[in-house]
Length: 311
Ligand SMILES: Cc1cc2nc3c(=O)[nH]c(=O)nc-3n(C[C@H](O)[C@H](O)[C@H](O)COP(=O)(O)O)c2cc1C
Image (cartoon, rainbow, N blue to C red):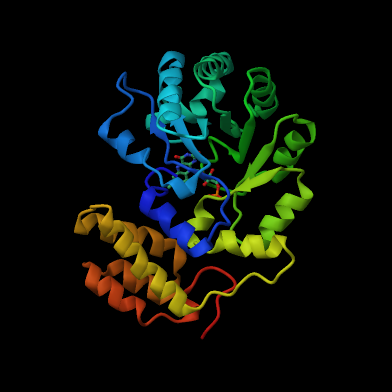
């Protein structure tokens, strides 16, 4: 997730969820400039050895530039490279990149062909189901992906026009999973272990991808692993949450972020993790010390995720 899944955030997830998140993906990397390794991309391509296999995601619409970006990702040690055909932001989709690729399927094919020819590592695709409800094209996307040697297709079950509104259409994901020869990873609205199990059992997907659910509950991956192995998902206590927030601040500081940036990232996490008066209070804080001191007064009813306990 752009602006979210950077190195400190992924380190936090790894620390609290152990080895239970099997594949981390970078923030998306723009292939818009002829110089792929811009300072922003250089920063976003950093990953820890322990994160392997690590996937780097790229976005753009120019086949030659995307092929170059894929090659760079391979040179930087990515285990796989993924093309983004899902981003709905106007600055991306409006230029024919991200979900804009769903409006020009011949170009999607051309881009995948060029990327595939450029690298030896597996090529993945992340797509929405279509541009809008009148132009659902995920069947064609699957056909193009399989024809061009894509090895994994992650489907966010919304259209570009839906952005993040409504619910992800898991029936559409299930239909594609039933006909696909390549692994389909289902994505959309999974924010607890029961939902994760339901999606994996009932929609024929090979796996699930989690975005916002990891911001709401960084423990979600270990809880899903518990549920998959038939155990009750581990319950999270206020002191675990408090320790995780304190740890996140340290991880952000160690990554040379400025005070304002650190506070911004702490609030980004908190705005999804917490609810009610506690959330309001913590989002109003003006400095890191004030923010952290609130965390010592956490109670279980401040959490917005299930499986939390009050001791
Ligand atoms: C802040 C934010 C940034 C995102 N950035 C990306 C991105 O860079 N690449 C991508 O494939 N999806 C991105 N997404 C979409 C998510 O990966 C995911 O497809 C979507 O949020 C639905 O899944 P979820 O309900 O598990 O969050 C982003 C979502 C959010 C909320």
